[in-house]
Image (cartoon, rainbow over all chains, first blue to last red):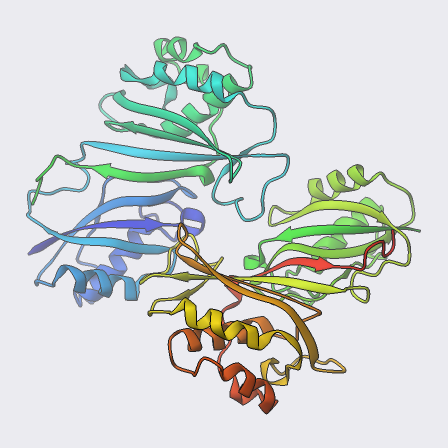
Length: 255
Length: 255
């Protein structure tokens, strides 16, 4: 068998998320269909493995997936074959040969998420599926002062929606930033960490919006983390603003 | 009766165009529903009048519409009332009181269209509904040399799809530009003229792409105009790249 690592982007608007579900259009199912077609498998014998799930409406700029096919195809041939089959809301950006050491999910060393929050009184019709929206005043300086409280290794139980099932809720955040994109009138958040719990980024953004609008004290995040109680962090920012930007692997892993 | 001029933007992706059609979701129908709700009319008594139609999938950044309601509402109240009712793919940017002199369709002095053509090998999944796409080499300099041939008053019969019904096919183009947006990797065309025939901008863009890829001589547009024959201008660029950017009225018209 020959293993491929592919890096993909998708518009999550018309997908019921990454993970396969009966009678739903998902990214995983869409990819498996394409891969099995290339491998000329009449039934879906070949499975694809993503770095992790994304929810319905969440986008990806650099999701990583691996799969095995029984014959060797050049990397560019695989890239073009997949893109000629896939629907227009998923695109393969890169296809690479990897060894059977490589595993898209179990091998991850970190992930980077972006959240785009559009400001302004009304939702821009061209952004409704691609940003969150906040129409009230927001003090970016307060948000920027709160961000360092996220950095480091913490038990993020308070920032985890029910429905996740992981051994531990401890994750490490390496970087958390928020910048104002004046041209777009958006606040663009980025979070880079070892991994993220179910809905964690969206819950963090919801709390940061509350801090930026003076509904919470600026250093409330440390208290919320300490509480280890989901009820402390109300709200979840909409899926439409969230992008899985990059998945990291240890250098040379599976090469 | 009190007449309102509204300027709206819409994402055309999920509309079967501007004009009402049985059993289709259209911009006109969507607006009429909102206006009649505000006017508290149980049946749809109030009609709305757009500056002109846009096709299925075509977007608007500044479409203009007028309507009359039987009571007076402040401009900002009308703006907020409409936006609170309308679905998120249409937004009212401005609402103005105008006299009964003003007519959104018959009073137009000109229109400005934009066409966004994405380059690059694959369609960006986030642009599939918002740009046209061309994956082959394109020489912008050739396109820019061809554009002046469009300027002036011409019979644009060769650039008019069947299905239009206008008294004359003579239109005047005041401005035609094409610039490269490096950040987006797109060619952005703009056309400003007295008016445009059915599919005219999309047919012009298709011809310009052929010129830019050396499939036609650089000054073929003059010959095509002269021919007054739709068969001379093959092709129609996809609706997804087209934006009605601005509608012009004589200054003080209806004020």
